[in-house]
Image (cartoon, rainbow, N blue to C red):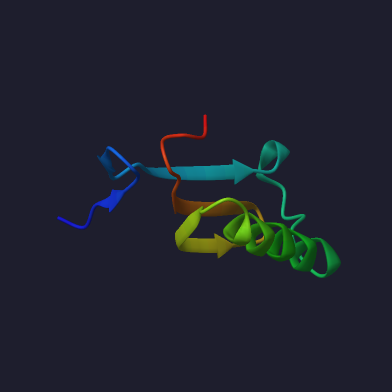
Length: 72
């Protein structure tokens, strides 16, 4: 089992997050898709968040991430 550890605890907190556009309209293309990708990469560098899988399509953004339990 691939667990991470903090000072007194071993953890494996993985989440699946899906952001869907209103009425599933295809709005995530061009500049907006590049901006979404930039936000995801910024999230990756922010406070120990590990992105396992990510997909940016025209109508949704899918993330599979691991976040340390000290962040709510």
